[in-house]
Image (cartoon, rainbow over all chains, first blue to last red; front, side, top):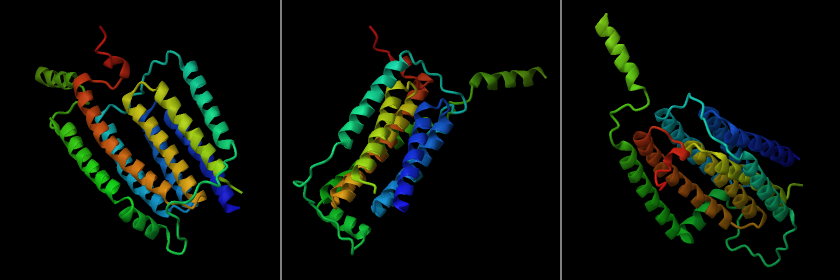
Length: 187
Length: 100
């Protein structure tokens, strides 16, 4: 009962919030709705019993990724509304609607799954975090290490790309400063 | 009772929303938001399949998707900052510098 209420509440709210993310003209509104949609997606993970995945979603997505986006938003001019040329938005909506229809029809079809066997079955008595840890550090150890190296590479690349010439301000208009300076000189 | 199909349908709807965003956005930062929506939709499908087939592999793949998304954001935002310094805007239509 509670699962159904939570599922329908979360699904309606995430769909609405992500629609705002996709449709809004304001960067701040889009980013805020994206962050709150990600919080609700971690709610899906908690319903599904993937506790550790939900916590990782909260920490990594809502904590780290959205903080990174908000810092990046400060560099760009975020208060101005985004002007976008949408030449053929009808075509875009037809394509998106058709792909949504096809995907929903595919997933609504019954799944005959007697052949599917659990490769790494869960142990409900052990808890989700212990299960995930055992599988991650035995069967998926090499992908884990590769992901760690990839995150290191991404960190170095981010520092090198964004760190150059950080002493210059490039969002504020330089001509405004010059006007103020010349006005002071006149006075 | 909520079944696997419910979660997969929600995931498909969210993925299509992200697809519409990727198709119609011209601002690069907004385009990144739309890709994040698509990655999150796929994570829901992974977690749901993992739960209903009692298998941990789906959750593992969701972890790696999250790691890849985090590194993609780090590198992509660095590239966006360099691009904004160079071009002064993030509009995709103004980046068509290879037009002959």
